[in-house]
Amino acid sequence: MQRTVRVQLDPSPGQAAHLAETLAQFTSAFNQAVRIGWDEGITNATKLHYAAYYPVKHAHPSLVSDLVNQARIKAAETLRSAFVLERRGCKVSQPVSANCPARLNKNTFRVDWESCTVRLSTTAGRQTIRFHVPAYAIRYTGYPVDTADLFFRNERWWLHVVVTVPPPAIAPCGAVVGVDLGLAQPAVTSTGRCTERL
Image (tube, rainbow, N blue to C red; front, side, top):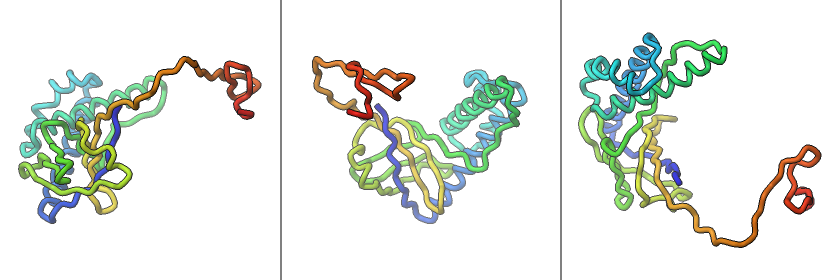
């Protein structure tokens, strides 16, 4: 199972400037990849990679390749949704983002739960930034990390970290419980009793 841990970053003013530049470059790379895919009618992530990687990387030389690829992957997902809506008869236009959250993978960030620091790839190189974990999310810290999204909202920097947690331990029992959606009653048990009376 996966859970998202929302942590607040505490960057220095210089680090905040680097994060802002990285987010601006990522948004620009996303919009450029979307424009290329939109013009050529591409929704497949691999085809979009061949069409967009070099133009996007050339236009954003300070953005590391993994972030360019993540921008292209997000662009392919967005284009796929837009073209599906268009096929259903909806009126769509080319998607554009004013502030696209930067998606990070295992090559572009590393979380240290013990020291509450994260090491991020930015346009100015790798930066180590402190963060705060809210009390309700502490139980998810320490688990393996998958991806993360970098946000700037309400004058604060946030990192949404996706972690893999083990499934809950459920003791096996011999009873089988099922719910049958009915017309007369919203749901009934296998014994025929209405759930409103349970």
